[in-house]
Length: 133
Length: 150
Image (cartoon, rainbow over all chains, first blue to last red; front, side, top):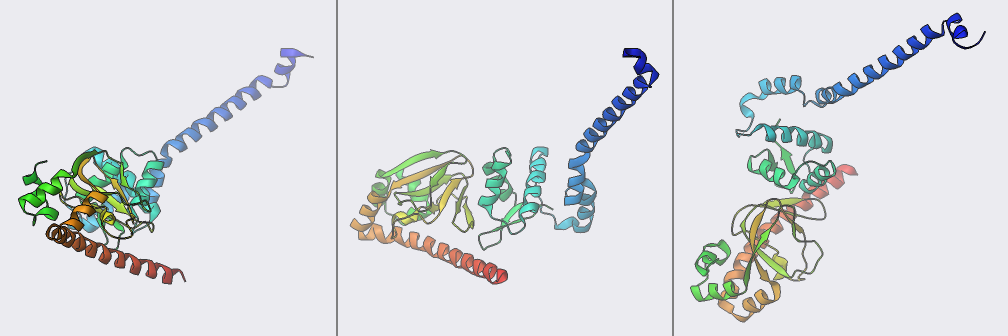
């Protein structure tokens, strides 16, 4: 017995359909995991919504007053992630260097904006502190 | 920039009109782009800068840094202080404008006219004093890092 007859006789069609389904399900699961991965990281690093909200309620009025558009808020998130990785107090030139390596848009101007908004403040010893928790 | 505008800057506030005119004659206004270096650490100090607009960061080999934002702030004073070599690197954080002075011409004016020299160098040394205090705080920080490491 050869060809399609042999495939049918030994459940070949069913086995190949199950194989295709297993591979397809695996790929879908993997893509979903990759999609939620940044959110999981944000929650672990404390920059995700759940933790930020709890911090806001804890600190409340201690947060500095500054008006910022959504673009700046997004930049704050990006830089907060870099600074949490660098530790505090941090070196300003290193932060710019890191932001450039990560391909962030206009790191010099962004850091200038942060300094004016007191999001980044000098520690008086040549290093800087992040004040936008 | 006019001589009168130059006299408004802190470093030149004490100068008479004729003294300010001498300084004005050797000054050049230059535009600086975001991310551009004004000078780099270790290079011979050829140019003295007075900030007219924009934000700037000066940083050192140990990664410490400070920023300048005010019109009239000065940087590159190694041009008039031995060993005439930049001790840090200056980078523009935003687009801006600076007044530049050729180091040898500025030094010639400062050394050639005692009154003008005194007025300018008093401002420069006041600035140097602030930077020395900054350097001392940097040293203390570095020592504490070393002792924490050991």
